Length: 169
Image (cartoon, rainbow, N blue to C red; front, top):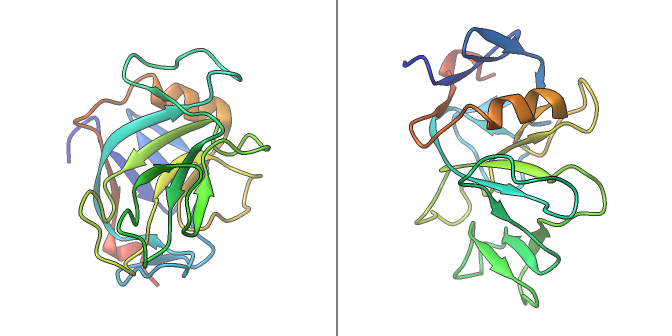
């Protein structure tokens, strides 16, 4: 581990000497992640991007990419673009990156099952704001929006999200 790694612990997400309360997937932590299981996957995941809503906030870091109403994320195993950002209109199942709620206003992308996805292993493990403390995600890491912003301002392309095997249940 390096000082810039984020590490999921039983107490929260440890990063740069702080432990931030967080939420994980409704399926818990799993080493055998599958599409739709709601689990947060075990492993060492690189941070590979940052997305933000320019209509709701200023650019949070110089490498952040703005998203708008046509930006989607494919979660359909039949799609050749499975587990990739796509544009509307899109004929396969997908998730909107420009939601009515603030859940994806600021997102860190991990390299889980990316860039060459194995179909069915799961898509879109993001670090994003939580719905509420203790309320699980669909497999992502959820944080208080103030903590998320603090983290985004300090991460870079060397930063990794480490989800230890010892947390798998």
